[in-house]
Amino acid sequence: MDQLPNCIDGPPWLQLLNWTFDPIGFLDKNYQKYGDIFTMRSSASNSCIFIGNPHAIQELFDKESNFDTGRNNAEIKLFVGQNSLLSMDGKRHRRERKLLMPPFHGERLKSYTQQICLATERIAGQWRVGKTFVAHHAMREIVLATIMKVVLGSSQVQYYRQLQSLISSWFNILNSPLFSITLFFAFLRKDFGTWTPWGQMKKRQRKIRKLLQEEIEYRRKNSNEQKQDLLGLMMAARDKSGQAMADDELIDELFTILFGGLETTAAILTWALYEIHYNPDVCEKLRQELDDVESNSDLFEITQLSYLTAVCKETLRMYPISAGTLDRIANSSVEIAGYLFEPETVLIPVPYLVHCREDLYPDARSFKPERFLGRRYSSFEYLPFGGGSRRCLGEALAQLELKLVLGTILSKYQLSLVAHKPVSIRRYGFIMAPKGGIKMVMTGKR
Image 1 (cartoon, helix red, strand yellow):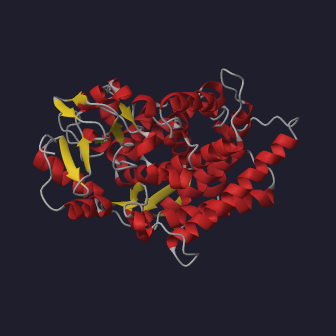
Image 2 (spheres, helix red, strand yellow; image 1 turned 45 degrees about the horizontal axis):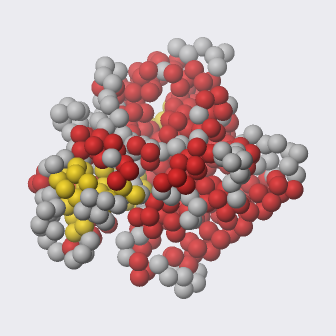
Image 3 (cartoon, rainbow, N blue to C red; image 1 turned 90 degrees about the vertical axis):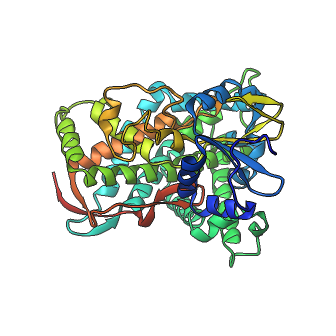
């Protein structure tokens, strides 16, 4: 224990509470006091090493064979299942990642462009001049509609609405402050029926799994209907031995896509809308760039715009979706940044701390998209989607959504913030999001 770097003062229970309820405040305070590598003791026998040093993070990723990830994320398995990519290590992780990769890249990714823009126009088309709406709720609705079409391609209206409603209510429970407590205190994870948050969550989870199972069974029986949505591509994928993914694997990976792609993208879109309208000069530059796009241009051209790309990158830099990346647990003795860590030591790379470094990002607390126009950062200096073999598989799809949704909204609508004031960041379940969801109002159409 004495060899662990920069151990935080105070009782373990207090450290865990601070990390649970105010992770950003916890990270800021201890970074200022201890530097970019420090240790939290969550109990008398358990410790976590937080790393905000880009060189140390690079060293950790270079030595990934010395670490496991899946086996130390027991909480995530409760939501996405045992067969999720997030729950795997070693050969099985590599096999699953290879099977899942094609639908998220190349021409297949580009084919989702129109669906994302249509979903955005459909939801935003419901806004009315002078009527207030909560940006986070609206962005979640857009992203969920996109996921339903891109992932499941559902054309059955009743099925679509039933599944969409269940997914939305499932996330409402996951994001409640009361439910957040269960993530860190295992004794609260008991299903005592629907009167408890955990019981409500598990009930909806079972219903969602049942509907997904029905869709998979339907497709297996009607294999002549070759669908080109993500589920169809996942069902058609084969590994080196010619083996397809089993039903449980498919369902768990669908949950992983929902879990990793819905609230995360919705939160970033909300922060982007906030910063764009909080900074009039940013908004004006974006509109000018978007107005220069030919009306008959390929929609995908929006994703190539340099200032829009910089705005998305700066939003991802400033606003962490998660307080840290997935835990790494040492499976053998390993040296990182001059410290020798014994087997079973838990290390957590923290992109937020890297992104706040003044030596990398001068005036780091200010929203300055221009910093991404004149400099390219390494994958250890800028890592909003994690890194190494655990880099987010849906990164390209998320970035596509960010650019297309923002581009579509800013091209067609005039919005403003209801309150032009700073907004705090808070934990909602596994993710970090703006407190209150940010209220906006449509002032007109363009």
